[in-house]
Image (cartoon, rainbow, N blue to C red; front, side, top):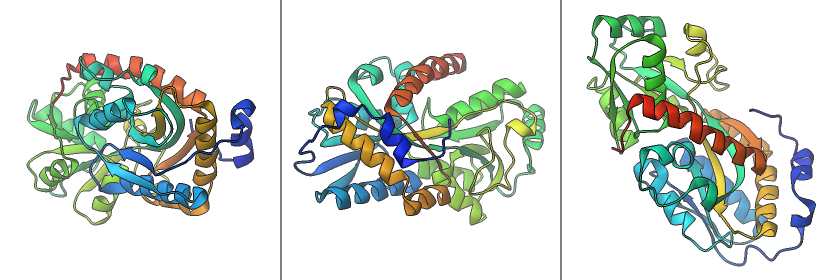
Length: 321
């Protein structure tokens, strides 16, 4: 749920006992971004890391560790020393659908992580190649029904919000479309731009610049509300499928057993940073929507999504790619 950020209110949410003095950080802080070094997610992680570093007087770096929809980086962080010096700026798949997609996942999102703050939600934009005779969700559904099994959609991996967006549209519209998972989002985009793949629900942080450059055509957005950065794009929900919701998010988490005082300091600093006008504007310009909910609410959302998204993954018959 989106909230108006109020720093004073966010600080009141923090456990007062946990706000005891701590010498953290005592050394370099590493924030793992479990995707390649490109797009708005990476840029947002680096902007936040820079603000942390300026406030603490200690180096805070972002380390890219891509693989398996973010689960490679998540496993590394889960097994790191729980002292707050290794964190993860995780996408939703590694903390939710990964449980269902990967039977031998090397960590438990609920048991092995301490949520700090859900930073932002990142809707997806349903896009097609500009040459396609599709300018609306209605057009796309009609095309898919006339060519059953021929329409393809790319994603950055099984269980991601891009994959679930396609699966949900197929279910709601009663169409037969084929999922083509990629390990590299850039290759997925390249194949859509090249006309080799019909469409994709591309994350706004990565896709919005391509839409603005005219390399792909935006059809609709996957969130319940229109995108702040591009309100001209209709939602799938208002295009005939009420309640349609298939978005990604990014949040900051630490390994479980990280000291309460360290977590409190991280929560406090995260609240301060995402309330800064330049950080807020950067995230919005990239296609993100600020969230900023508390650690407890973040933890509850992860548990809820593990169950709800797991049902959709199983219904779609998704397997690890």
